[in-house]
Length: 193
Image (cartoon, rainbow, N blue to C red; front, side, top):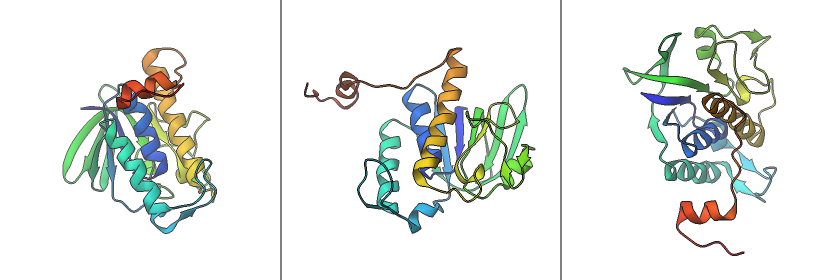
């Protein structure tokens, strides 16, 4: 059983997975590799001057892999919520369980509908913490925004969902803030002062 299952491997899903795994929650990502990033070129992502969407995605995948995220290829075909045992996610014919769920499937909202999440018009209804009407289920990126599909917005949504999950786990507001010494410890090198 994972602590967190993320459905979708674009900027939103991988951002959520990065934050949760980095901070001690076992995270599994299911992805069909159908993200719009393969059709994009980023000129508007802060800190990145210009990068092909597939190249950006590859870098993000390497980053989550370095923290130990369990990335699996496959389509999620069913999700069930159980108050006592979290979520049951079916992918590739197998059922996987988690306490938390992050839906990051772009404009494809059928899993949120099947989970009985509330909608606001055509989009999944969430607050600033990205939590849906179903406790411990989060929706991010294109699922919650009508026609506002930007990689940087989606990545922020994924981070917001992850920080809310981490805050629930800690029982207080959680902040993911690193200092240079953290990087030295994570990557084995000394940081320049």
